[in-house]
Image (cartoon, rainbow, N blue to C red; front, side, top):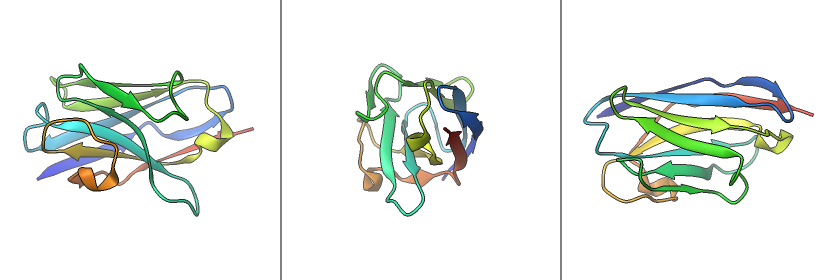
Length: 124
């Protein structure tokens, strides 16, 4: 089992920044690929970003590319999502997810464990 707890969400004005954190515990974290997803009201959950277990490979949704940066600290069992130049359309609940097998993936079904989510609200 892997337990994931997100933090760092909040209310921010458009153009502002937030850094989300996802603390992992349980099964070995350092060998897991990690991902961030988000779900806006009345919309389906969508992929945001993913990072390989060593952090050498990352991938982003086109909608956040150039504005968001994913990183991880395996010594702290934590993955981060730095979000800059936030837009109102970034408003959503952001979820951290863990994938037990190697390789970075962008599908919801590719991930084995999920956190409870943290709310990000961007005002215009």
